[in-house]
Image 1 (cartoon, rainbow, N blue to C red):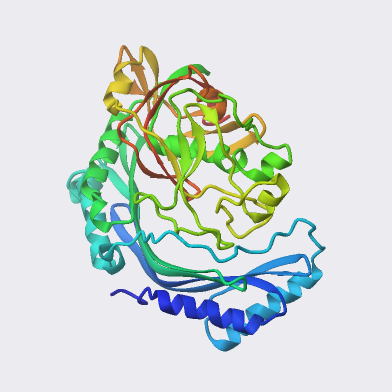
Image 2 (cartoon, one colour):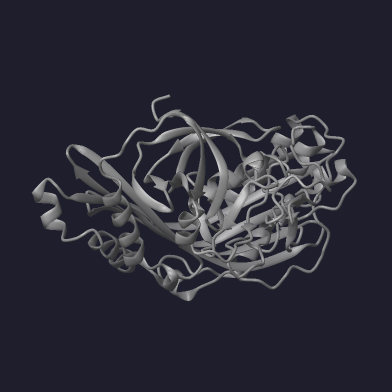
Length: 462
C-alpha cells in the first residue's frame, strides 16, 4: 500500500474527536478524509516530477446562535483539532445571524456505496510511470522525435487518490465510505513548419485498470498530426460536434449556476421548472451513487445523496439544494451541499444521457461545420441567459460533406449553452458517454453531442 491506509474507522474517529472538543457549544458537523495521493507529471516526453501526499484533513462547520462558520486543518493531533474548533467558533462569533440557517442533517440512512478500487489504491510511482511511458510511446520513438526537429513531444500528468471519508454531526448523523480516483490527462504536440499542433486525450475512472494510457496516447497523437497546417475561418455560427470533454466544460455552467436552488431563489437562474427549455432528447441528472461516479453518497451537511433528476425529456424538473436553500424554497434538501452556504446546492456527479450514434456517425452527418475537441478559459458572461465565452484548443477541425477536411486555427466562442441545447437544436447524441474532466478539475459523465449551431465570435486573439 502506498502512503496511508484509507481507514474508514480512523476517519470517523477524527470526526468524533473533533465533535467531542466542540461539546455543546454549537451544532456542528465534521468531515474527514484519510488516505494518500500521488502525482506524476511529464513534459518534453520525460517525467520531471513525482510527488506523493499523505492525506489527513478535517473540516468543521458550526452553527452557533444562527451564526455559521467553517474551517479545516491538516493537523490531526489533539492540539491541531482543538485549534480548529476554537478558530471556527471564534469566526462564528463574528458573523451576523442568518435567519435562514438550517443546521445539519438529522440521522438518516446513507446509501451503502463505495467508489473504490484496490488497483487505484495500490498504484504507485512505478505504475504511473508505466502509464506515462505508454502515452508517450504512442507518438512514436521518443529519440527520433526529439532529434529530428520535425517530430513532437508529449506532456501531461497521471494522478491517483485513495481515501476513507467520514462524517459525524451533533445531530447524530454518521457516514463512512472509501473512494478512489485515477486520472491521466495529456497532450501530444507535433511541430511542422514551425507551427505546433496539439492533440489531447484523457481518461478518468475509479478503477486503475480502466485507464488505457496507450489508447489515450494514440488519440492525442492522431489529433495532433491532423492539426498541422490549420486554416483561418471567419467568425459565425457553425454546426458542431462537441467531444465529451467540451460537453462537460459547457454543461458545468447551467449545472452550477442554473439548477442551483440558491441562485434560483435569488432570481439569478435560467431554470423555469416544468418548461421544455431543452431539446426533447436531453436527460440530465446528478447521482453520486452511480457506479460510474466518483463522489461519496452524502453531502457536506450529512444529507444522503441519491439520483436527482434535473432535466427529463427536455423539461427542467429539478433544482439542487443544500439545507439553507431548501428552507428558502420550502423544499427538501437534495444532498448537494459542498460546505459553503454562499454557493448553495451544487451538482457534483452530473450525467447527460448518451445516444446510439458512434462519434464518427455524428461527424458523418455534418454538411459543413466544426469538430471541437476541447474548450478552455471558459467564463460565464450572463448566468441568467447562460451566455458563456471561451476558446477552442487541442484540435479544431473543419467538416465538409461528412468528412474532416482539415485543421482550423483556434477560435473564440460566445454562446448561450441552454439555447444551443434547446428544442430542435440537438441533432445527435453519441454512444461514447464517459467521465470527462474540465479545466477546473470537475468531472461529468457525458457523450459527444452534435448541435445545430454554435457561435464563434473571433479568433483566439480576440
